[in-house]
Image (spheres, helix red, strand yellow):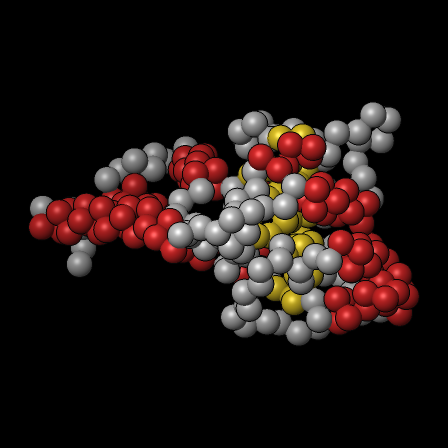
Length: 248
């Protein structure tokens, strides 16, 4: 298993699987990506994705499987992505207004945006913390008693809906969406200032951090937004240092 360093940019959506446990599922997902002409496959702490079982199920898309990029954390896998769609088999209270899959076209940014679609573990899906890294969340409506789909089936229907609603146009450089790496830097900077001004109350700190993380995930900040907010936060820190309330 190889770990990647800097991730390459790609105009096509990256399909990200978080801790998949069954090689046959990963192989089947690679095949689905080949079916829909999707982008690269990114895996976070996967099982043996190059096993004979996985390769046999990938069939003509074995190249997608062999070229899959491996990451230690979801943060690393999304670092260069500008817009991230999380998926869930159920509606989540923490993530505002998760949309049913047929409405995914209303979420898609323009064609110049580096996009990722994230799928969780076969047994438990994505955590709330992982969904907080996403700008939007979709769920697949089902009619039968089994509410969750097999992993490869879920990837298939999501990619199908996305190909039916392709993004168009190009974002001007001045308003390009910030990357996940930039947004994470903003989060870290914000939490430093919130801590300095005493906003992170003992006992509620984790909940407050999660709420701000959820807010930023939904806000779709641009590169300019991030630079503006970090400039403001820097000025707050300078003011606090001059008042002797923050160490240099």
